[in-house]
Image (cartoon, rainbow, N blue to C red; front, top):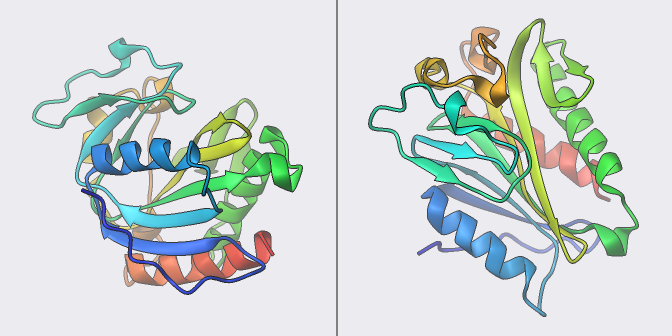
Length: 210
């Protein structure tokens, strides 16, 4: 069962919840339940997952090459196959974008800019690829974006590689691209911690959603 540890509510921004390490299935169920609730309010969850491969609605199962002992879960987010694991910062956005009058393309662009701003704190220059939501450093992907919208409310979100074992990415075609390489913040700053990146991310999101 997913236990929500509530942070103080900020009236001009969504409520931020730092959830630590959470099982993917519990988090997924909780997100889907909350976006349907009459008592819905904007929240942003920061967490990490144990090792798992997730398939988006556009996923081709053949892109999972050799999962080994790592579970593979079908989800309702957009996108292809990706990997979550310890040392990766996952941020889920439970937002009423209809009330905010924000379209899906604007939200995705905002999230790409958010990731880029976080990376700039670590002197990492990044870029976007047209038609492939996410953020890249050179030819290597460092962050993924996958969302679902229901009744004008979003869930799912972004994953940013901080300091993790990247080996499982070689067991899949990441985001459906054969041979796509991935990278992470620790390749550029060996002293980085997940907690540091969370702190930077919250400051950037408070600005973005204020």
